[in-house]
Length: 420
Image (cartoon, rainbow, N blue to C red):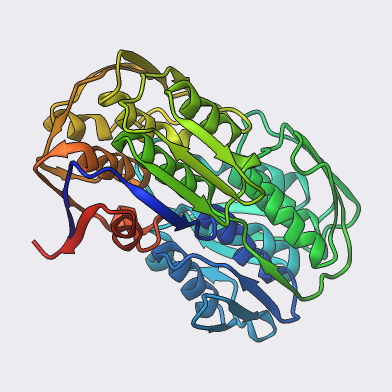
């Protein structure tokens, strides 16, 4: 099994390009199920989850053609079944996103209950209740969600009692072909939801209010083909910027979206970094200094993102002072802490709060990735640790970071992929 071997102590410097956002690409790929016309999706990241979603669409009979630039052309006119089997779904929670489009367009769906990172409870009941409100018949049998509707789904007013990104996306897609108006209240505001909505609009959907907590969708009878580029990955961007800060270096990320990272950039400035931005680039310069500890509290967008929490735990671990990190989204998202303790970090966890006391340096050690973003924190910690760190179970990293060793290597990191 592959591992990453990292020798710490190098100050990162240089320019890196942001890949397409996995969390925008996956729902956009699912949205192609809403039309029988050809669709081309550009700027897809070359990641395992993307490959799994394409395999899932192919298993339903969709035509899938990928070029060398990771643009994919999809043809749903050849679809011959509406099932998402467990062997494809078990590794990727985002597979639930095919449920809404399948029911809305084809009137039926069988989707295995999803898997993914073990970072806490992420129930799909909000998805199912919303589809039921739109007229779908839902049952769960043998680990499969079985959904059907006679004719078209019906527009409905749906209130989410908890902000849910995938729930918002699933019902947003389903509503585009429903009969009448659908209003999603307490909807997720994440940039990835906005990107999905813009893709749907380019397919002929009638959507207003995306990016706010109330989204209104006027259902149409059919959607048409389009060519659409996936937005840049704000979490990958943020990870590289934190890497600059934690190593005392200077890194510019290009082809990215500045506005989507305002909460993260604010905390980097608070940590003492010099942050400059252009139309599509962000640069962090730590000027060789050790960062200052910062307090963060995760919450739905536009607040501080849970997907950047682990990276800031790593930053605080070598910062001046003490930082308090509060995790409000997932109840089991401090699994990286035990691994960081093996590297000499001083972190105390109580409930949903981690108190991180900065050390002058960490020490290299064998560690194990436990989920996608936790693995990023271990890479960051290894970059500043004395000696070698070997990170096991890096398939988690490969789910969310494209060519991570090549990108960090280009910035000067001593990082390689090894077999043992």
